[in-house]
Amino acid sequence: MKKGLSPLQEKFCKLYHKTGNATRSYINAGYQARGRIAESNSSRLLRNDKVRNRLQELEKAASKRAEKSIDDLIAKNVEIAFSRLSDVIEIYNGEVRLKDEGDLEVLDGISFSKSESSSSSDKGDSTSISKSLSVKRPDRIKALQEIARLTGVYEEQKRRAEKEGDSEDRGSKLESILGSLNRFKK
Image (cartoon, rainbow, N blue to C red; front, side, top):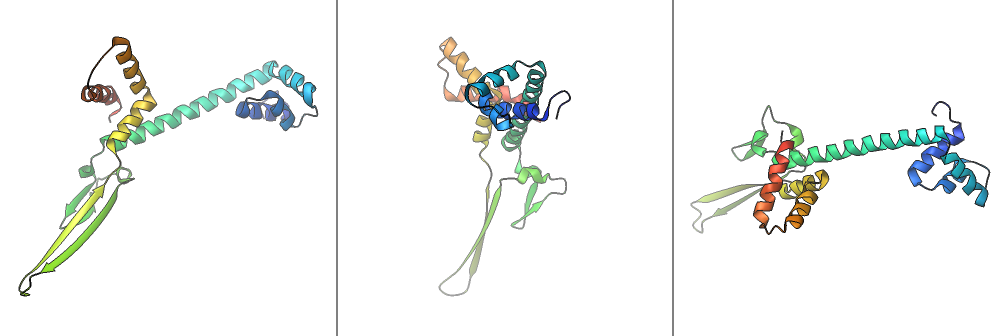
């Protein structure tokens, strides 16, 4: 509970911040009023300086959390888009090995599958063994698109193109977006 607020006021602030419905928050906080009285009292409570200050604090905290979440999403997508498996793994005699300095985080979302087949000749004099390794990594293009969406780069490029009546082909648009995203590259 914040200094200067009653427990009911604090509960009201948290409920109102979550729902945006003053009357419902007033009732659910535990105030003993119904109908128009609850509506009137909740409106009055929203004009209280301490309540307004607390609501602003809650909004700032939520905004910081959202910004951090977006930053985390951007960082993860940058990792997917620009990571190189060769920095982390090596293949030696058909076996995948983690390099000593490799960062395990880069391997998130990557799947490996190994297959082996053998065949022999009809005469029985030779046998061949075939080994293959398949690596499937997260989609880099989707990661770049998500970065563009989260940073607003895509919308900015789209607005600019519409404004200028630009008829660029997709390749040059992608090149432009990638250029804008280079600032996020580690």
